[in-house]
Image (cartoon, rainbow, N blue to C red; front, top):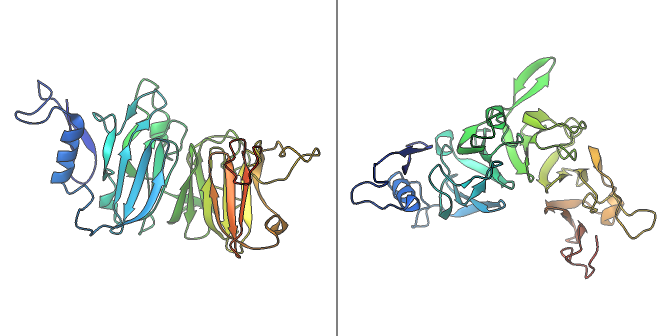
Length: 325
């Protein structure tokens, strides 16, 4: 079988008897790259497409260039244990354009979870790509596939975004995107936040602990002026226009910043089903300008440039010289 790339996005495989075209390479990676080069789906070497954004998954990297094109390298791992980047390509050692993205216009923001990615275009569309077995792609048709079938979506596809208004569905446009381990978020232009994916620790903020296979609104965040949202393995942080930090999800390593238990030595062992705003006093009374989340850690930078970090610290990843949460 030989891999090829269809114009405008998408991958396919064609049989060639001996496994290669006459005089061609038998390496599926080389064949994939050759096809990509013919279709102008490799990063330009003349500097015309400078990298302006990057997102990293568990074993893959997403690159966004100044023309709004999206590239990826590495590999994905499906729930059924299948590794891959394309139907006949197990791993991709060089950046190549993600199939299905370009025809929807330039991309302005990218994010990556463990084995999936999400892209927002200049026109407000959202595309998802990768593994979707717990709904993180917002594409129900991937989530319900039989386990014997691939849980990998090789081509990025536009996911419709809706919110309910007066008993009716209204289409909304995306401004920014975010991704947790197996969750995905969209910040809309109208100030709403939508979420989909794994929710066993209430990391979607919907309050019910139920997984979602399609995007739903997070009511507690709508209208709060969220300008940035970041997510870890099972928690998220949202930053509002006013400089407040809102947290939700798993908190047993202190990654929500809820403080310590009565012993004053261990973090509060709690998960939040509904987003909660952290007191401004946590940050010395200052407004927060930026937030970030690792798997089980969180951090924030205040208006004066002070850095606050909290969460799992047994490997000294909090930078405070202590080996504890």
